[in-house]
Image 1 (cartoon, rainbow, N blue to C red):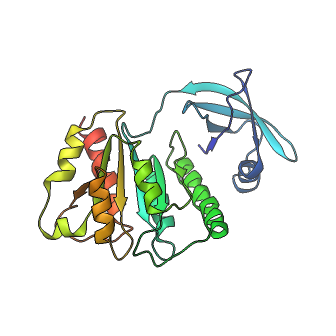
Image 2 (tube, rainbow, N blue to C red; image 1 turned 120 degrees about the vertical axis):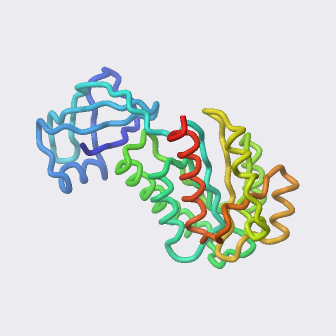
Image 3 (cartoon, rainbow, N blue to C red; image 1 turned 60 degrees about the horizontal axis):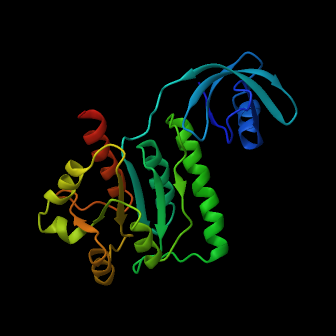
Length: 250
C-alpha cells in the first residue's frame, strides 16, 4: 500500500485529510478511489491503515481502519554530514541513505568542495533534497522523513556536532594505513537510542585543517575498510554497517 506522511494527528482519531502534492499523487498517479486503502504516518511516528472515504477537487478524506505497530527506524540515530559534492551525488546519498535509515542529512561547505551555493541556491537545493527524502521515506516505509539541513559552513557543523554523543569522520589516510578498529569500537559502544554523527569529505577528501578541527572537537577518525570509497558510497557503507550491527545482529 502507498504511504503518506500527515502533518497532524486527527483530533477525532479517525478522519485524515490528504491535500497538496500528496493529494495529486493519490488522485492522479495512484488513481485511488473511495474504498482504496493506504498507510498514513504521523509526526509521532505512529502509523495506521486508512480507507479513502471521499475524493474532492482539492483533497481526499480517509478514515482510520487500524493502527499499526510497524516501526521501521534504526535503533540509533545516524546523522550524515557530507561535504558538498559535484553534480547530483548528494541527491543519490539522500535517496539511498533514507532507504537505509539515516536520521538526517547535513550538507556543508568543505575546503575541497568544488560546488559553492549562495543563500538563494542553497534554499532551492534544500527544498529539492527534502522532497527526495520524503519520497524515499514513503517508498521504503519509514516512520519519519529525515531532516535535510540547509548547507552550512564548517564551524557550524562543528557546533552541531556538540549535540551528538558519538562523533566520527571517514578519513582516507586512516584507511590507507590499514586502520580498521575505530568504527567497530564506536558501534560496539553504542546502545539503542544513542546518536551518531558521521562526517564525509567531498571528492577531494577532508583537508588537513579540517582534520585538525574535527579531532580537536572530539571527532574520531575512522577507516572504512581497505578500499577507498567514493564520497557518495561511504555514507551508504556506514549506514549498512549500522543496520547490520543493530538490526541483523540483535
